[in-house]
Length: 135
DNA sequence: GCCAACGTTGGC
DNA sequence: GCCAACGTTGGC
Image (cartoon, rainbow, N blue to C red; front, side):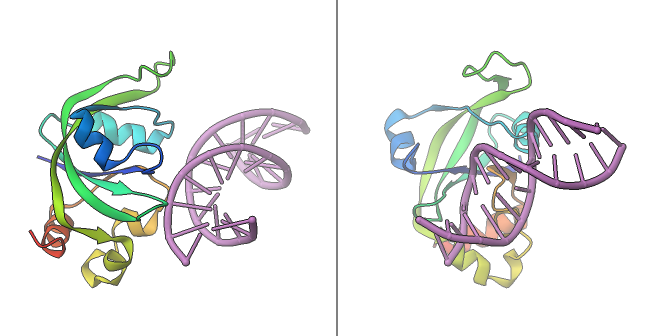
């Protein structure tokens, strides 16, 4: 199983909304690097749900329930979507600041490439963040 | 609201 | 194929 991090501006689509919807289409990705990661996802993979702009924190974990398929918001075959469902809310959100302050997480893409909205997370990084969230 | 970082576009 | 110009993202 692989681990990921998905970014969303809470104004556009929040964790709370995902919980209500129970499932959503992760569409609108128009960046090749992010697209490639979407294609690598498997059913059952887990992903941190990160609130960008407002909050700037990891709030929950979702899981991939459908692998990459044609993005329904565009006819261009270059772009794909996956389906995700909420798995659990973190006991305590982990903020970007806390991640930056953690010596073992300075290599995270979240810290170094702030603009990539879909990114892989190493198992080790995942475990550290889980610990920071009080799990 | 500003601006740095990055990606994309288009002229040559 | 290079690179300047432009647009977007996202932290502050």
